[in-house]
Length: 397
Ligand code: KIV
Ligand code: ZN
Image (tube, rainbow, N blue to C red; front, side, top):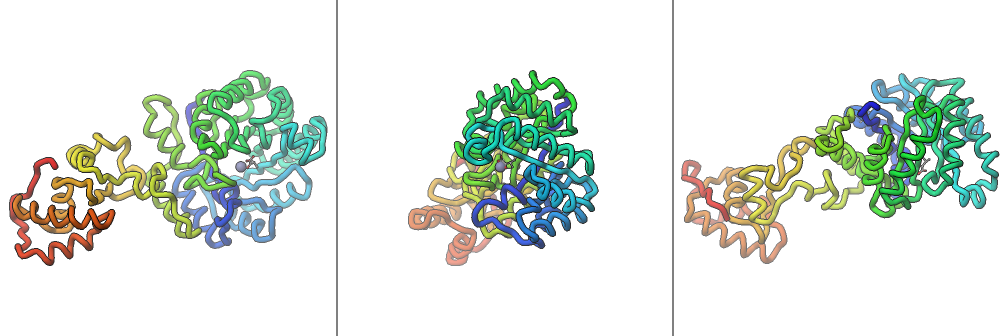
């Protein structure tokens, strides 16, 4: 089995569906181009039946994007399929992504259809899509709460009808990592024609397990992960692209998988999404949060400045940040303060540094973070001159 993991980005579709994240055509186009630079294999550009705007946007993205596949989402209804097929007509690599729910609870209360009816709609939809394009994905919505025997039947049937990717969503973020792993293993071992399709996973983060579940799935045979920049998406969001990509990259010694993600474009992508939507990420968000590479505690700062490997498992540069952030606060030591001042152009001897250190710690007691401009003010008020040649303080602290 090959070890390459296809990254399917749904920031512009599932991500955009979450409150406060809607984007206009120009914004989506800008982000799609950034996703292409980021190296995602598939960009799910929208849900064309949802609105004329979504249709036009998917069409425009299809015309513009050359390297990534461009997917359009549709239910299994004919009018949905027609819209999706038309929306990706100009794409260099078009994909149709059609879905229908498979769990008994959805069949009874949402679709009011039998399993036979659902299976028939799924097969017809895949056949229809396949008559236009080679690349067809079928999703069994709420798969993690569906009867695995029904999943085996429906997935086998859609693969026979031409589906090249079968997606197993944990739509409500309910699965535990070992349950989800078992489900993927069962499907991989029991779908007779599985060699003709890629198993994909699409995990929601309601219990904070979306990335863990996605990684467990690849360990058990999945080769496509659906995810979003900054982990945005319905409710608690989707598996976060940056966490998936950096887990695979950072722990390749353990997992041995590869992706096509250019990790240096991770931070710029996250920033662009935040700028477009006006919604920043929480400071402690893994990989892209403000504090992900920030060190305030003196003992950490000292270690990181001596050798980043002491407290960093990946470099900030590897995700597109130019440097890690030494934050001066009440936990900082002299060593970090000295380095910070050097960055600002001040080279102090030990005695002067001690004086400044007293002032900085007093200020840090009043305000949480001492910013560069505070340091500059302190330096301006100090009565010793700035000595660029002075021996700088380099002891721990
Ligand atoms: O969460 C989900 O089940 C979905 C499908 C449409 C793939 O978003
Ligand atoms: Zn979803």
